[in-house]
Length: 365
Length: 185
Ligand SMILES: Nc1nc2c(ncn2[C@@H]2O[C@H](COP(=O)(O)OP(=O)(O)OP(=O)(O)O)[C@@H](O)[C@H]2O)c(=O)[nH]1
Ligand SMILES: [Mg+2]
Image (tube, rainbow over all chains, first blue to last red; front, side):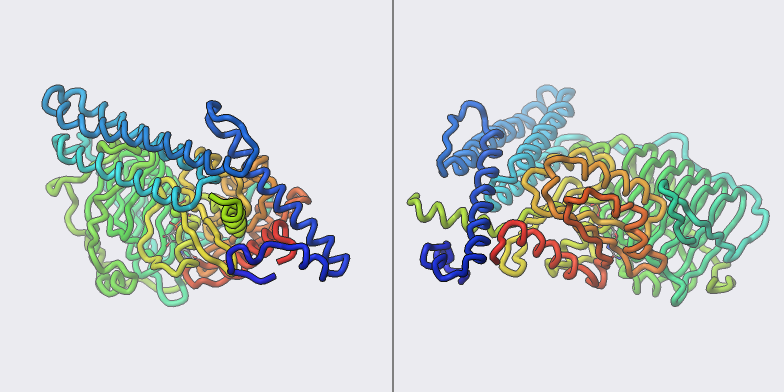
């Protein structure tokens, strides 16, 4: 079959007659499938259409469903735009109502996004893309209106989370304990390096050469952990009252279930789940995110040890992007500030943390 | 619109494939899509919602839907199921702790009737990380052998950082979809 020339590659009778019977059978079955496939596409677009549309089974239906979508889309768009336009007036006449007004707009935009997602399977890709562009423009508008009209409050939390300094029992170096994990279908997974199941201790680990990979901190209570050197990925799970200092992570840090902790981390991505009353001092290339968290506060990275500048540079984290302050809360997808997190004011931040001991550690495990 | 141009238009759309990428958050979906598309992968934020990439692959146009995997937004996955030709399930092979979660979400997805005809590519991503499980190990954990016999599936180890394995995976996926739909090609 020739290709790339508009309708040229439509199967024709003459083509059929040249083929041997076997191929011809195959050919016919392809045609059947193709037409069955059109039919399912058309049918399912039809069933999704507004009931007001008359059902007709000719080919023009798929373009009618597109236009029905487009008219619904532009109706909602217009109504959102007029709501946006009202915001300024509400801000001056009835400021108390402004927040809920902006919230309403945000949820209308989410509805609109859902409409696009639901209809996307029959829409031409151009329509999908331009609808998505419209949605992101509307979001942008809400954001800038919010920034302009809603007075910037400084969000702070009263009880500052301070990791109580227990006298360290001993300085444990390189005693990372490996465990093997078992999955539900009893497949035993190999060991993975990390510090686990400890209380009131200090740990150090220096990543070097071929030693890098992923690393896990889990089930620690009132511990301090100092990690230096570049490594690939950090998994943090179930920590209480701990202080975690880490050099650059070239992939991502995944944090789940922590409370009353202080983290000083540098990474390409940082994802925080189920965190309570904890402070994060971050250097991060993308936007940090939180989910199911509250009482978490953010500040810029503040770790110092010999050679850290070079390590950050090598990991692509040499530059302060300012992203430590651009937190997305997946439990608060609205334009107004999430109540779950805030920025740490300068006078509430810890001093730069110097970890001198790191240089004396043994290397490699 | 004349009849011929309508036919031509539909014909062209038939060369399109709709591919849905899902998996737990942090598994590397967005990084994989950007890598295939030859874009810079050094600054990627967790996906709030979804991205669509239209990529020309061999003679097909792939519409790739990359949907965010954070727990809060997994319930929206179902909005994207309709008319999916290929399903790509991405696994972070270095995230040992969440493999049970990963298996559970995949099992749920495969029960979905609207996805029953879709070819399934499982990408065991992050093979570049020391300590990552191999594709064979991931297949055991996910119990892939027990999958419904009518499903076309394949597991491939890959790294979105080095690019290793990505073409092998997508070649299989596109060929498999094509052979189901465009028999003669
Ligand atoms: N080492 C390594 N890291 C990877 C690889 N692929 C992705 N990553 C890292 O893993 C993290 C998550 O990648 P994303 O592409 O954002 O993951 P996602 O699946 O799109 O996540 P959601 O959008 O939340 O669903 C990022 O920090 C990536 O740099 C890989 O092959 N190797
Ligand atoms: Mg993503």
